[in-house]
Image 1 (tube, rainbow, N blue to C red):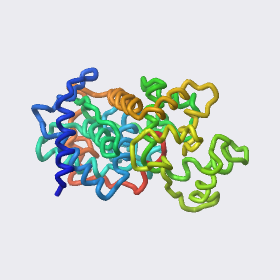
Image 2 (image 1 turned 90 degrees about the horizontal axis):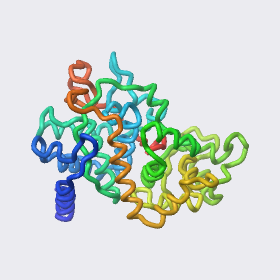
Image 3 (image 1 turned 90 degrees about the vertical axis):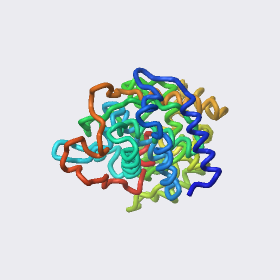
Image 4 (image 1 turned 30 degrees about the horizontal axis):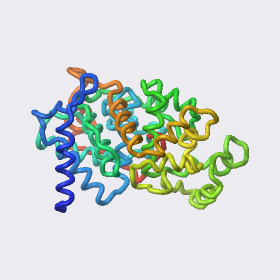
Length: 351
């Protein structure tokens, strides 16, 4: 049973959400106010319960939403399992053996179906879950625009093409975000999600021993941090270990990610590029977000809302899936749940 402190906190979050009246495009935070008024509390409750035994779940859900939106829009396509007609995005290179939280999304959907049958899309559940993940990590809350519908398809090829890699240069990162209609501020703000979660050694090990085939480590990597990472990730290790994305506050969504970059303690190349690329316009943004957590939070929330509006299906497009892993009418989905929720978890291979 929740403590009184948690009950008060949950009630406060609910009041915050019903008090907002902003909307984004045709989506609206009040979309389900009449048809499913307990939606947010239900989503929050399931994720809070999961967080009691999995302190990484918030980061995993933020990443899951990101990886959904960058592939044919925020339509829940990443949730679809392999079937005779679906080639799952879960098996794309950036997702395979790394995305987490699928079972939690299924549990949310089941709970929501009990109170509001055939009403709330999986894409909307994923958008709310990302916001709850931020809140539970100590990050900002925002009014989540709702009204998305679920896709009937997935696109593994597009997932391999569109999702930014952890070894991307700044120019490659900017290009990947521009394709989605996101600008440089969005790039730096959303990269701040790497202030919590974990990453596999395989996503950054080239920085430790043979950066860009030079035979030397990445010169933009703090030498003390380098030695620490080499202990976790030996050069010829057979096990792909996990390490914290943020070496200071690994389970908190805060602005320490940016101060880490200033000290050359960014874990991924794609992280450190934001600060260490000579003359880059991202440097001033890193400095600004490092100096003020409130500035970072406001930009992060705004960019999450903006990202959540990418390529959404509305009106009569798509469908409201009854089960998040299968399109309606797919017999392979009857009685099934996601079988994929690997032990590993916005740009990293793992979170």
